[in-house]
Structures are given as structure tokens and as C-alpha cells.
Length: 336
Image (cartoon, rainbow, N blue to C red):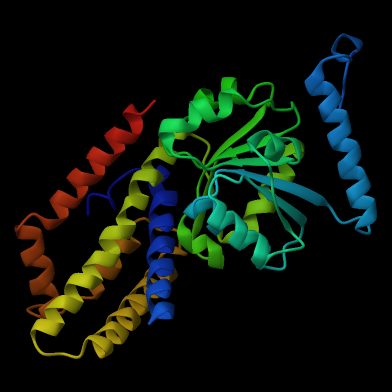
């Protein structure tokens, strides 16, 4: 009810929550041009920019005019692997060439083996930057400064950060002279092109069209103008693990009643998948009150669902959830 009575500006967050719920349920079920003045002519980053654009034009010509986008990943962890897999597993409108850093040798080798004609493993992070048009930064927050400070970027790079704690303004001096800097919130199901892909700021400029075209096929692209809204979505994304754990706890309880764990897994996955798809249906109407409406419609007066909801509410389950989200949002706001 509190969320439903909030400002309509949070509607994107509600729809994103619905998308996350639908994606997580399905996962469980399936697992049972440059302008340069003469004063810039001898600057190294300008020379690199000219070379980069010439190389890209040659690549486009070699590919029958298809737009070639070279994507680099600094850091090859779970999220980077998921994003790269999602990009390369679909009929993407862009001709993608991916370069990954060698830091996580096992993941890098796995991607190169899975997509041998599309993925290259760079010698180091600078090689990733030099060979890319779009550079995705996917390292843990504690090393983002030291990782980026030693690298040389071009003005025409597009930098997309997956780092949860670094704002766009934090990142700009680290990737200067790059002008186009974005933050994104991808989640693991993006590997299968499911769920929301949050991007800030929106890729609205003509020079940024490749960024939008790059990520749009990966799922539901949610573009947010203000960083404060991005942080709300980041906090909301922390519901992923609790969502899974509700099912894990329900399965444990079913087992304690003597119910088959295998059949319990199938039942819970199918149940939560159906519920999440209903949520997606009502969220698509664009009415923030729809979550309240579907909650009311799910209860029969005096019925079991009414009892469960009332009892959990009286015992502080939902208040605690919102308190925890506030704590996580405070952490996101207070970081860097």
C-alpha cells in the first residue's frame, strides 16, 4: 500500500520489480565521425581516436555495411560473463566483436571457447580499451579506482560501468577524456536475455545510438534520467536473493511435512512463475495501484491467503523488508 501511494515517478521501479520477479521465476523453472581542431592534432588520444574510427569503418565495409561494434570488458566476473553471453547468444542487430580481460582466466577462456569467432582475450586491460568502442567496467568497487587510473581512454569511447558504488561523476575523471559515461544494472538472467537492463543516463544522443542498440536486445531496457532513481532500482534489485530464499524455505517446510522435494520444486517453480506472469500483465497497464489490486484479488475473505498475508504483516515481515531496503538504499547513497 505504501508503494502504491508513492509518486508516479517510481512507476519504472514497480515495472522493473515485476520484470525481475518474472525472470527469477523462469530461471528456477528452467533449472528443475570525429571533429578535431589543429590544436588537438598531436594529442595521443586524438591519434588513437582517428585510428579507431578508421579501423571501425574498415570493419563495417568488410561486413557488408553492417555496423560493427567492438565491446570490451574490464573484469570478467559473473555479470560480465552474463552480459557478453546475452549479447552473443541472440540475433543481435549489430555485428559484435568482444574483447575480455584476462584477470579471470577461467571465465575468459569459457567465453572464448563458446564464441570463438567473436571473443578475444586481451593481454591486459589497456589492450581491452584500445581494441574497443564500448568499454564495460565490471570490477568490484574496491578496485575500480586503481584499475581505471592507469588506463588511457579515447574521447570517442563509450564507457558503461556495472560497478554498484561509483557514480557517473566519480567515473568521469578516471576515464577522461571520454565524454559518454553510463551506469548499468544488469542481473545474471540477462545471459538468457530476460529481465530488466537499467541504463543511466538514457542513451538519447545520436552519438550514443550504438549503446542503446547494444543493450536493447538483452531484455527490458529501463532508462532512467536521474541517478537517484537508479539507486532506488539498485536497492530494489537486492530482492533477488530473498525471492529465491522464500522458495527455498517453502520447499524445506514442505519436506518437513513429508512432501517429495522433487515434486515440491516443480510445484513452487510453476506457482511463482505463474504469479510473476500475472504481475507482468497488470504492470503493463502502467497503473501503480495495480500491485495493490492484484494483491486484493488474490484473497478470499476468511481464506488462506488472507490469513497468511495478515499474519506476516502483523508480525512485521513487510515492514522489515522496507526497513532493509531503506538500509540498502542508504548504503548505495553513501558509497563513494
